Length: 613
Image (cartoon, rainbow, N blue to C red):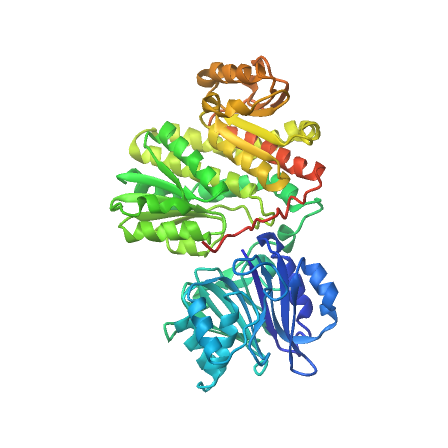
């Protein structure tokens, strides 16, 4: 959620790291934030300089003239408020009483109130409402009785409780940055004559492609030519864990598009093909399918968009594999916590692999005897590491806050798992399985068709909806989870109130709100023979109340009467329909945001990776 960047360099190799901190932090803007700050050890004086304020990174950099300072090491942070309102005082970095120790932190320190009281009793002056500030003052206090900052830092990690990613800069040791990780993600970037620490890879891609993802409970320090990691007091050998990123820096930039969201929608044909290529002979898909086929009960969980992908998985498992799946939103795992999950399997879906609610559900499920299959886009992230089997999508970096390409790559991955499960359970023959998986090779083509057939119509539709305040999105069968995702996208980026329902549920209450020109979008999916008549009835129900009826569907639905505006994505079957239908709905959300003057890449109040409960 918040963003961390730290750099320490040999001045003979890099004589000023300030620009690296600024550029690295800007590449974490997608995570969502309300304030930004920098702590620098000045080249000429060796003093610790701290600049921070609420607002955008560029505004903070300009207001304090940060670019003109020369630093030999530094840390930087974007904050999304959890303890204390967005303000200059609450922005990170936080410092000790002597202004020698600077700390940036993602997550929550659960015992900060107790620690704050103890520190204040010892005479420390805390200047913010945050939980983070206690870290700086604890280190100051521990230094009084420690031989070194390293000893003080080791004491610190034994005392603080909670979810955290921490980076610490000490003015008297400008050649070193200390770090610690528990739950919240933290990654080391390995350079030549410099090293970095960050909460996500895109911030470091311009400077290095070699990374080490820290595990829970690990802590240590970086120097220009050295990385040291410990866990529970013991040295950790990390060299075999080096990840070499294949993403280019262009993958993390806009590539000529006006917004990341549009770029990422347009990337879907390519990333779907790349994901399919990686999955088609994946040993992990086979292992996951075997585990699921043999399970007594199967659950699927996620948050937001990932939960909607889980609903698609549940649909396919029922339709194709003949095996019921229990979906639940990750934050509601408490409903199942008293159940013995021995013999059960959970599919945990998380784009980042760090979503805290999903991670907590995973841990609870495993503690009660269950096994876990993770689906994630980030290799080496926490949720895959803590699962029995990890299956990865290949969407590449997604910078826009609103998930687009990661949703469809999740759907593709889960579809492959569902088909393989159907094969193992005997619901599909080998020839039927081969035919279905071969059709999925065309997922990228279906997405391209959906984009090409809708892009102009979506512009007209968005213009006609710009003055509306409410929208319904309705579907049946496979169209229900796709409707949920469409409504979520509209809400996230355009701020229009959009609500999704199963179409058959609309007459049980929601239809009471429908009046003249009320927009109702129908997401019409195969199999048409089962749904055509029912969707037709729902359209007429809305039309008779004066609604403006909009259809986004496969070709057979063009026969429906009473439709005011239709987008025909082509003649795709139940396996390929999501890839053709979803991009037009994403484009509608995007265009609504643009015509209303909203920034679709940075929706208000939202963050990309939610790492606090």
